[in-house]
Image (cartoon, rainbow, N blue to C red; front, top):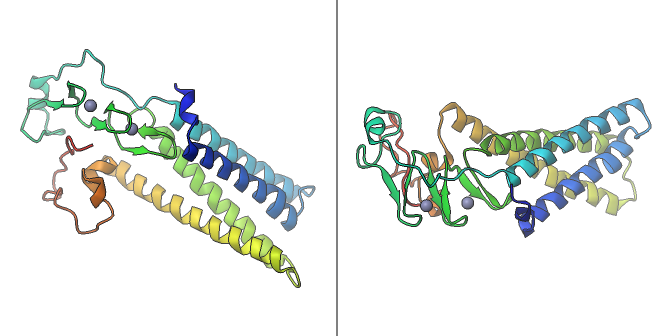
Length: 242
Ligand SMILES: [Zn+2]
Ligand SMILES: [Zn+2]
């Protein structure tokens, strides 16, 4: 657990964004839509507060939980890796050394250049949590994406419902505020929805992002950079590039 990971601009920006979305959803949109004093208003406010709490808890877990490091005593089991057909190495059954940490890497571990160490079952380094997503905090990361997607969609639905019944005549600044917030919330919903679909796909196929997108981060956005893919029947794990 490392509290100083919270001391970064992207992490602070995420916390500010969460606070802002919570505030406008509950105290502006739900209030304008049905009123916080009504039973529908208080029920929606309660639902959204619960979702916000889940997001905050899973976000904090992502930031604080150590993704997993290779124990100094780790010695690769050559016999076992030779027998295993699930984690084939590039050089057959050869153990993979890390030339930066000067230790061996277990299967699915990768070296993170930002964390400057090898991370167990590394998925990717996420600047928004100022931490790697790895073996121990992948679950927290996945549920964070899930809760963030649900919260964004919830907020978007409340905003749209509210704007349909609101009279904006002669109130251009208020209308602009609704339009900008609506565009932002739809953007967040699409982003988290896509990320969620992607990680559901990865979990179903038991792969990490590096295994799917390839080891070269510069090529991740290029749809035709698929030289790392084999015949599609077996999925080797990527190696020393990260
Ligand atoms: Zn390393
Ligand atoms: Zn990292």
